[in-house]
Picture (tube, rainbow, N blue to C red):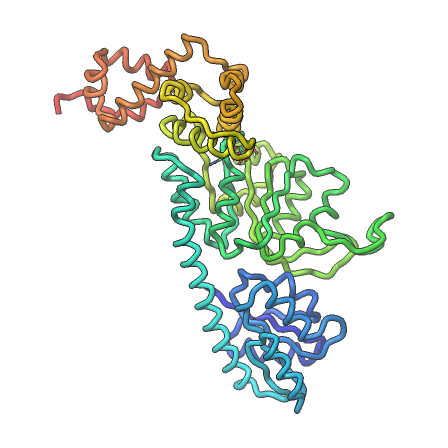
Length: 447
Ligand SMILES: Nc1ncnc2c1ncn2[C@@H]1O[C@H](COP(=O)(O)OP(=O)(O)OP(=O)(O)O)[C@@H](O)[C@H]1O
């Protein structure tokens, strides 16, 4: 993983010459003129070290140190002190500085301290990653329960992508649990414990979007009396979830793409770039590739986000998980409503599994709410209240799907085990929307 040195010094000449010297020594350096700007950059996910001059106007080096160690005690901060400023150096160490270096210093001396600091930081980050992964493994099964192939795949993606720094797109139908997945990814990452800020792109007021997201300086527009942090800055060190990103206006998509690429933002009414240490996750119900083809979504933004895509399956693709999910939702509903936990009987669970649940987990959750409150759970199924024929059809579908799975898609074994003809099997599969590819083609032999 690439490591960065963040250098803060208000004296331009000094900053430039140190930056150059360190770059020549092989470090990747990012330099900033003020402590305030460094705050957003060096969050808990920051894999690098900070060097700062101790004497600066505004927030000084000690103030910066204090703010940084407050959010991450293990972030190495090295302070540059003036010659013979022993008491300041002592104070810095007392407040948790990793080390200090006295002016004037040689590049070699600074580089040596930095190498130690970066090695140390690398270990801290790696350790956190491993600890988080181990601790969250069991937790993830509890949060996204189920034994279907679809949910096992989902958990595998979340486990792999969650702890990484990669921005990701989470797709799936309404109510399938995209936001729940996003939060699980955040909690698996080194950013867990930092803000998780969900922004519903469909509900942003058009005139306010820019200042809402990016913040503004005083006087940026009439009524902007004082500077204001945008939501992006509020999420510093954490994760931003862009919910329903497909609803974002095109011009804002262009700005977002630049933020994703450069990791800096500029407040409204300002030209100063502010580094942004956040990870972006986005959700979409709509097929963004189609939206891109239709020109309502930027192709380049789609490419950028789709590198890491997590697909959340509809409930109808994981019927076998419905009983387990319903039990979990009933437990949660009982706790939420402060009523006693009720155990649904097996017939009810079988009935639930036969339904289609177009509203997915949200709809199932409503059914669980109604169940613990002693109301008729079926009404919660909305317009799709199951009539007998629908329940029979649902049952038939799940029996056929079960037989296909049990016989590994072996055509002849499937229709024989069901006691029907090949032709009838295909007709019923078509009727129930079961994909023909579930059956191994050319498999109608005796083998
Ligand atoms: N694994 C889960 N365990 C418990 N509740 C869940 C789970 N997944 C989803 N839910 C619940 O179902 C509802 C819908 O979930 P969520 O908001 O994550 O779905 P979504 O896909 O983001 O929906 P939309 O597309 O409408 O925004 C929420 O009330 C959520 O708490």
